[in-house]
Length: 196
Image 1 (tube, helix red, strand yellow):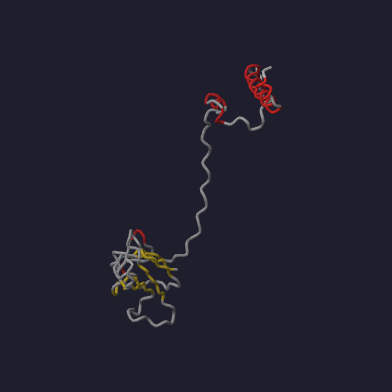
Image 2: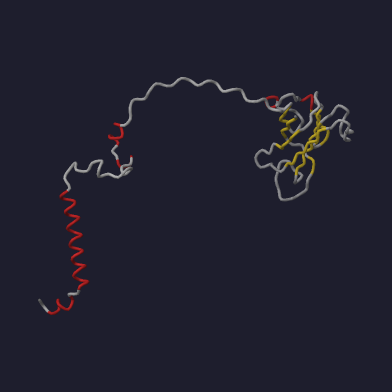
């Protein structure tokens, strides 16, 4: 053995070379010596084969023909009646949208001033909720609602038969725009109202 080889022949070099040799040969042996059809259910771990690893033809074997449609279910029970006695979609000019209104019509609404709408309803509401129809970018309207309680005197802009009022306050004073300017003013605006 040459002297240059003896100087480099250390325990670590011998072990590293032996490990490399064994690793290459064992892998080659496994690839060559595993016989076909020798892996079965005993060699596979549970859940080792996923649908991704199975061919489409094999997946079709697990699917049967589509069955007939089942019987139609029974109709559900009707929901509880809502508590709204009346509701309406009201346009800026004080007219109502008939398809979006119940127990409120044009005859019940008076457009008494800019942004002020009075209601003369054939019933005495106990509560009401209103929200502005903030369509597209014109969404800076703040509507408020007042329901006249028994014994309350009517506000100045009411007649004796009125029992509800909406005031539409536009925060920048212009109902068609939204700006950073705060200059609130009563302005005509579409709104939705609900009476109980």
